[in-house]
Image (cartoon, rainbow, N blue to C red; front, side, top):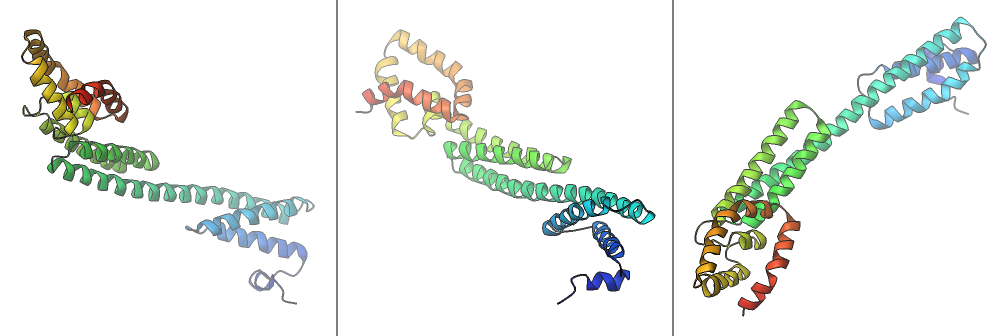
Length: 246
């Protein structure tokens, strides 16, 4: 039958069982000294070390045993280095993919902002920020963190610009626009009717409207960045929308 250790016998000149074991340990050590191994080779290296260690430990004390123990210890150390390098490569690949996703979402936010779609810009910016943060966490290198931060800032700026444009005086329904995503939504039109028909003709109502114009923009900016707050505001103003939407 074929000799599975033929190559080891040929390369290392192994003839006895101890010499064959020594050749196997030397071969494992040689593999561990390579600069790059793939995931399967790293796993096989660890398996070989685990298999050889008890066999070496079972030998009687001798210079050969001491040498093999040392080589296995060095192989284990090299294995740990290779494992860390593999982990760093995996994290770098994940970070690269997440950064690409963040860049794409940031472009979507910018395009939506240019088109005047504040709601879409806000949603894309939210995704871009999350992906950029994930990329920074996965890599943890200064260059990637800097790029991720720049991407997140660009996306958020596009969303903020779109929101500010949507808050121009033609709307003035700041909270409703933030809740429904656009001053052109029918729910926002319903609330405009409420303002014109109920609040503006009344002196107290008119004062309330003027005060609202002053205090609501910063609140609206917070609302537009949170799906939970948008939902809460829609629930609160829903009765007015239903009344004046008819």
